[in-house]
Structure formats: C-alpha cells, structure tokens
Image 1 (cartoon, rainbow, N blue to C red):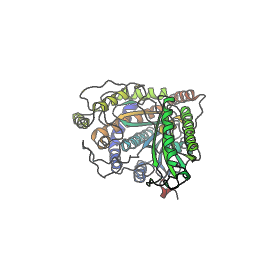
Image 2 (image 1 turned 120 degrees about the vertical axis):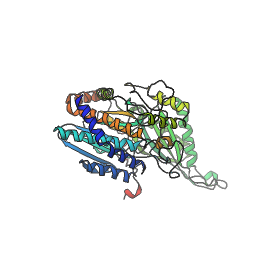
Image 3 (image 1 turned 90 degrees about the vertical axis):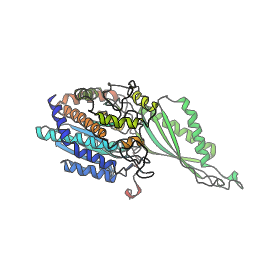
Image 4 (image 1 turned 60 degrees about the horizontal axis):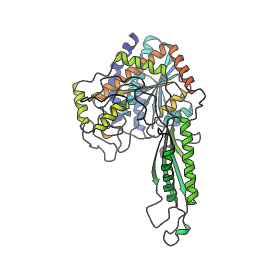
Length: 474
C-alpha cells in the first residue's frame, strides 16, 4: 500500500536519532521509578521532534507523554525505558563481563522498546503534518514496567480515557503479532507482628512473626494443588526479623507475587492467599497486615487490530538481517543450552531449526499455547482501550529473558534493525487506523464484546500509592 511504503521510508529517514537514543538509555540503566535521566532523554527528543510534551504524567515523576496533531482519533503508542538490577554487562561481548559489579542492565530490551515506539510516533506525526490529516498521535513513556505497574497507576489517573487505540511492541527473538495472553498479578507484602522475648529464658512469652511467615509459606505451598494449572505464586522473605537466633522475632515480612490467567481469577486467588496469612497469624498468635505494592490485569485481545497489524507485517516481511548479524547471534548461542533454544521456538509455537541465529520469518497469528507467559502492565491498559502489540526480533534465538546475554546484545546492529522494523509496523498500523475510522469502530466493538459482563477492577486499589523513591515522596 502506498501509505505504508511512504511511512516506512519516513521511519528509515528518522531512525538514526532514535538508535542513538536507545544506545544512550542502554548506557544509563535505571530501575523502577528512578529513570530520571532516561525520562529526561525521552522528553528532550520529543521536544526536538515537535511534540507537545507533558512531564510528571499521573503524578509519576519519570512518566512522560508527547502529543502531536489536531482533531480526529487519538492513537497511543506505548514505550518503556526501565532496566533491571544486577545485570550490568559490557555491550557486544558473548561473555559475562559486568561493567559495574552488581549494577543495573537492560535485560528486557526496554532501551529499544521506548526508542522504537517514539520513532513510530514521530513518523506518524510527520506523515499527518505532510498530508494535512486529522488525528493525534501520542507517545506514552511509561516507567517501572518491571514490577512497578506504572500503567496501572496511569489508567487509574485517567490518562488513557480519551485514547481510541493503544499500540505497543516488545523486543523478542521472533517477529509477529503478540498472542494476547498474559497473567494478571498482584504483588503483596504480608507484614506479621508478634512479641519479642529471650528465646532460651522466656520462650513461652514470645510470639514469633517469623514462624507465621514460615507457616504461611507452607499453607500456600499446599494450596498449589488446588488452584488452576495456569496460576503462579512466588514469594520472598524480605524481612526475617533480625539476625539473632536467641531473640524471638517480633516482626517479619514476606512478599508474594500472585498470578492468574484472568482478572476475576486473580482476585479470587488473592483472597485465598490472604486467608492463609490470617490462618498463620491465628496459629502463632501474631497479627498480619497485607499491603498491595503493584498489580497488572491480563491482556485483552482484539481481533480486528491483530489482523490489521499482521497484514502490515505480511506486506513488510521480516527484518533484513545480514550475515554479520547472523554470525554475531551464533556467538551468543554458544552460551545457551539446547533447552534455551527449544523454549524460544516453543513460546511461539514454532519447530526448532538447526544452525539459525536470528529470526527470518513472521510467526502466525495466535501462535503458542500461552503456557510460557508472564505479566505486563500493558494488560491493564487493554481493559480500558482496544490494544494491540507485536514482538520484534532484536536478539539471538534462545536468549534467556532478563539475562546478561540480552543486555550484551542491546546495542548490536541487529537490535537496531529489529527496532526499526517494529517502528515501521506500529507506524503503518497507526496510519491505517487514522485513515479508516471504520477500523477503529470495529476494534471498539470487539473490545466491548470481549468485556461484556466482566467489569474492570483495577488490580491496584485506589488507596495504593506508587512505590516512588523517598526523595520524591516529600
């Protein structure tokens, strides 16, 4: 289609500035709600591109939004830029070599995610201006996807209320339209309080909060047999009550991450976990207080949007990786095992190929059975706005998620090519929607039908505040 090829040309013409942005973000990895430099870099480039920029979106100091265009439908393109702790790694080296011991690293490719989404938004902006089209494109720079659930707080604040369609992507090993399956989740602290005492002289006077944590963990582990096979529960003791064994622990905290396939199932499972906590407190004569930290809804699919994005993918084809890209990918594959590579193919319902470093296909719609999935705060957006996502190939097949290998590949030419490819698809999908209002109406009808009879309940309650750094809570 003429419009698609034109906007793809625009993406190519603009891409270098956004490759540079991605590389800068890679070099300043910042974690949940501390992405001050990364957010500032995104805001600066938005201003340079001529967007109307809003900072401190939804009261989140590192959230930024840029809007361009006038009238017409509002298309949101979602970006992220947060990193992960403990994954510092030298770029381009197929050997674990931290730049900073214990430092952060972009182990989920969010340096590419945000930059690629902004590139798509900038191309749409330029096309609207050049052709005198009505419509608005917004880039949402969303912090803290890795456990911070910023999009849930943004939904709660109403910043998506006037959006017609939301588009996003995520770096991956393969290219295609994301099968819209994810796990709804809540991250919850359970704070137990007991009574301290001398563990030898007066043990009968003590009431151990640590005992309560241990009993809760046992109870939840027994509960696993009696919950859905697609649900997941993980926990970590974040406060064991001290290091002295001769003191009965008067306090202890365990953090739970509860996941389920649907939002209603999540709410039911969280209620059961809370009952186990109450039972542990009863058994130990302690008290317990639960505190929700974050939460994501499951993804809601949208057939018209997915078919539209897939049609653009079929027209464009997969990324044009060259022999040098392939050779670099195979060097990284030498650090993987056979299970890593098989799992990478299996996640997208594909049969493994021998001696293949990078993706050269587009995986089919609805690929994969949804068993190898996690959680994303894009899910919360998808309950209030018709949403579509793609996967873009930016790293070697078999690369484990949240790994030093993924960090190391974040600045390679293949990563840039995959990012540009994803930007082309998001831009042409957005342009199709702006140019054909009937597509937007079809997407909204599909969205309404899917949610019929299932009211949206934000997994982040109204009284929960985002876990901002202390210096920003003043």
